[in-house]
Picture (cartoon, rainbow, N blue to C red):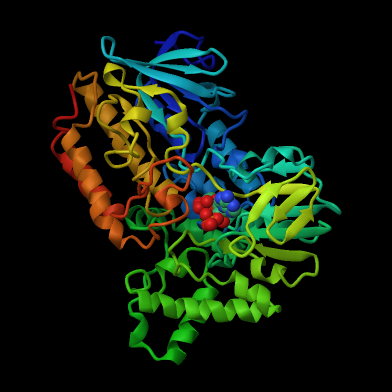
Length: 537
Ligand code: NA7
């Protein structure tokens, strides 16, 4: 085994665990594996730590989970020494936080940056993985853990002429480190997911004009961010244990308190007063503290949407623009709802306009602008806020080959099949925390439960002399049956957005965990309490 005292090992070395990805989960995986006594190397394709919070450095990028519920809970000392400045911290602060964690826990010497994994091949004889990166580096390891995220490979639409545009072009997840100069520029923002609706209001006052190209209108609601006061900070400090315990027990991974009533148990007047409170509540509380039937009763949900429609119309002065901004084809939570600051208000500015791609689709991008069916608009900059190859984008690009030469891409030809969203049959000693079929709430909370499960398996195998961990096919099939069985109860629309996988050419398969935390806990408990029966050899 290579010693990592002096830094990442030489090419051709051998370690216990290779982790891929220095995001919030990869860093935690690195930490727990090293604390368990494993030699660990983390390969990261970027030049710095942070994952999502390294790549997404676009204007307006910030959490929509409360900062202190997103950060790590494994160290009380870390909790006490890090003061989040805002309820929903901006990207630079989160990147600083994650780098602080890397340095505090002495993780940097275990990380090899600028290392994009291009192949990882299992060898049965030595029960080990050989992982290679684009620059020719090679490492052997007993375990391979890919914490590469579900939202890490940017997606650009297949629009004719996209490459012909001669102005500046950006994707939020490949935002440059050097400042982008917006001053006096005509900017197009394509896409109204969480990224597009964060960027546009942030730059609107600097640019000559912003034109938002919207395909699907979004039920955006206020984020309701605020600075964390000294009083709140003191409360957070004094209550680490109870906050940690509450988050660890929470189904959603948030601290929000569920409501106790259904929509139509109250009068319209009471409902509207309650919705007003919800409108003014933080981030995801719109979902988690709403009437209990919001996501199970379409009429109840439509009532909330009627309130939101009123709100949008009251904010946006031009009725025709307001009309275009109101979703008609999905209810609240049917697509991932963004939480915003000043988004609808922005459309009242004289230099901001909206193009509905449902009414006037894009025909082509030209050297100077974007041509829709109603004509050509000229731009200096196009921001493609068009999302990601969700769920499997990164895993499918790593050249993973398991038992008997089976490529992961072939095993997943009809869409991913997983156990717990962390492992799959035919790929021994390989794990992917934070992968498809796992999450159903605040991501770091779900991901850290998965990592604790994975590390538990690795530790048990080591303690009992096993070298090989593979999920038998039956539990994987049972997990996939659960996904299909619970899918109809998921609030997410079957069509559209990445929850069903919206990337051209990819098989449509549900990619989240509609059974949520209860099903994940149940399945993990079963495996652990049986002493991992059938998983070890
Ligand atoms: P999202 O949420 O996937 O949003 C992508 C947006 O881009 C969405 O509005 C899409 O419209 C739009 N889009 C995608 N393809 C096209 C084409 N071809 N033409 C026009 N518009 C298009 O990605 P984000 O980066 O905003 O957010 C990702 C996550 O970051 C989010 O879930 C949070 O976890 C934080 P559509 O709705 O598909 O019609």
